[in-house]
Image 1: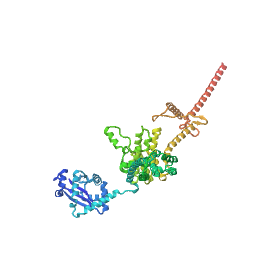
Image 2: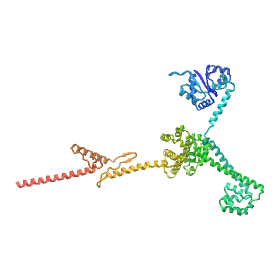
Image 3: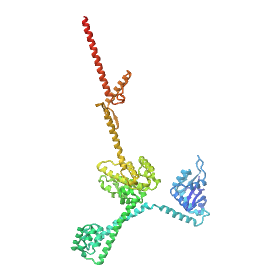
Image 4: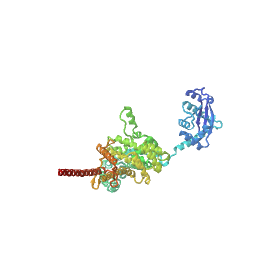
Length: 601
């Protein structure tokens, strides 16, 4: 069987025919030794066809397609022109060797050309790459290197391109810097306290906040010069006039030593640096909040900006976080404890970075693990919505990642496609609804109130995005979902009222059938009522046979009305009365006959 090799170079597609493989054998070690020698390798592998790229843009497009495992139209035409044709119903007498198995499977699906990718084929392609400039005759010595350099730059530049408003690298760097600043500001403020305490030790007990301590130390400077004239300035810094007076009183009886002017200047400069770092930390936090609202608004509204940024930075990117299952997200940040537990066969950790969320702190010790699992599930949903909500082609990807349930998938796809909500998915509506769902779960653990289902929450979120871009009425979906059972109960009550009205006609109570009792889903009807109905039907059938058709009472058929029993009772009473009159007449006739007979005697 002939073996063709597909080689994608920076200058174009090339096809090589490998023949005479019996000389070196199907052995990778033999191929490795023969690849270095061009004379020996050139006898086995020969150039069959070469298709150069038209431009640098064409080369970039082809390179992107190959890296994603897709076959372009140009590559398909090139293969169909230069490879033997495949007859239907017969096995091909050749195979195509490719470097990437993904593109090989795609070529086989479209063109039915058999492809293979193994160590033997990879060694042959390595030899082709090594001696490629020798196989192409018209190629100049420096052309291949220039093409490789230009294509490498353009390919990497295209990969680095991103949406400026939604770049998660800035969030990763900001949260790293924020954590570093917290540690540095804390250590520097402790150094200021220790340094200035040699001069004014009583100030540490009066002012507890690090930032305020640095401001007061810079304002006071020398304690011996502190007087009552500086009380308003101290009151402005501390926000408390009593503390300002207490500082002034403590300075008069301070046990600290005196410092030289140069030492005081150094302390003041260092305190100023600590104040600047604290102010910069506040600005950095505001910057992080704005970036998180742009990149992952739903995740930020669900779990908070800082915890969400830590999750993104630990996962590496928002895309990596969206690809993580909820079980991985739950213990993200507790990898050491996890592997230690697996090694020692102990208990695995229940939570990682999401422990810093307020939800887990509010849960009881018994329910902390459950709450962490539930919160990780909602965080994974929010991160997937934030990550894949930018492109219309990612609609199915969003829905599939948000919920594998077929009902929820169909509902979300219908709403997203028909109402065009995809452009407005970059809102906090989904995160707010998921947060409400987590709050309901907390209430469920405490009070036993059942929370809403995912499909109801997603429906409410989609409806809120449709009303005023996600900032209108937030509870429309909830009201609609809650109104349905009330309407059903109203209908039930109406039915009951109608039955009650039918039970009373002309002020006389009618015989109403007893309600059927339902046990475990099976309706059990009382046997006495069934027997009565059967007897009544038999009597009516006999009356019809005798020619007495049932009458209509008030336009209602006797067979269908609930008044059958009462009407039949009236008929029975009438028949009894009639029978009594007949008996009386017969008795009177007999008496008359007897009296006549006595008179004749």
